[in-house]
Amino acid sequence: MEKVSELYRGKAKTVHTTSDPNYLILEFRDDTSAFDGERIEQLARKGMVNNRFNHFIMEKLAAEGIPTQMERLLSDTESLVKNLAMIPVECVVRNIAAGSLVRRLGVEEGISLTPPTFELFLKNDALHDPMINESHAVAFGWATHEQLAEMKRLTFAVNDVLKSLFDQAGLLLVDYKLEFGVFNGKVVLGDEFSPDGCRLWDKETREKLDKDRFRQGLGGVVEAYEEVAKRLGLELPA
Ligand code: TMP
Ligand code: ASP
Image (cartoon, rainbow, N blue to C red; front, top):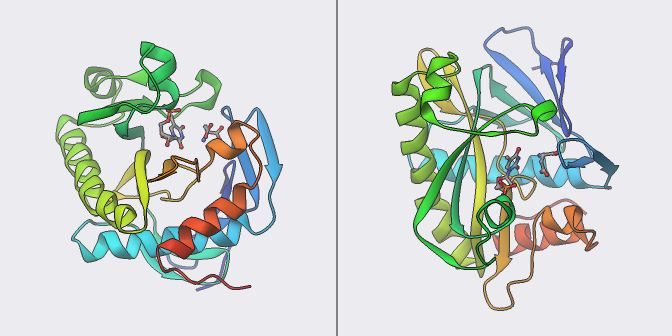
């Protein structure tokens, strides 16, 4: 399927329409953004790595019964996906304390969260993605109770699949953010799963192998993403 016109340019991906209104093309760019778009840099190979990574993870999730928007890989930097009506609420599960949880609650980074936490954020860069609760989402019409219950169920189902997948690769899945949309009346996983939207630490050394390398200026960002891919057995083009 071919790109017809640019529908939306996000911070790291561009969404294109196709000749079929039910399908879109996601183009992963090398742009890397942090702090709600305050800092953006181009990192060579990142679009290719994230496109391939996302396709690999979405296929694993689909194989475990999680509905995803992924149809197929089209090229190194493009994937064909279902055209979801996106829900502007981000779902975050945390297995280990890090990031905004540490800043917000003053807890120590690295402590285990048992059971894992579940949080909702409004997708709104201008407001810095504020934390919201279910009643906000329902009152403002961003999602229904039923949709939110399904989003929570699927977000935890993803945790079960991916915690063990990353564990086998010697990695800790610290936390991650998912976005959902509606397709034919059903809640479906959209957006992407890549090291841009999760935290992954080496199991032994706790070295950070995700976008915190960019946020914290640690360098070796794409190299870390490629290391994660390699450990998962995902072969990337040279
Ligand atoms: P946080 O610690 O900044 O709240 O983020 C938790 C996880 O969710 C972390 O892996 C980054 C991811 N995330 C995004 O990728 N984009 C977002 O807009 C938010 C709020 C979180
Ligand atoms: N995804 C957001 C941004 O690109 C937040 C972050 O990852 O720091 O600005």
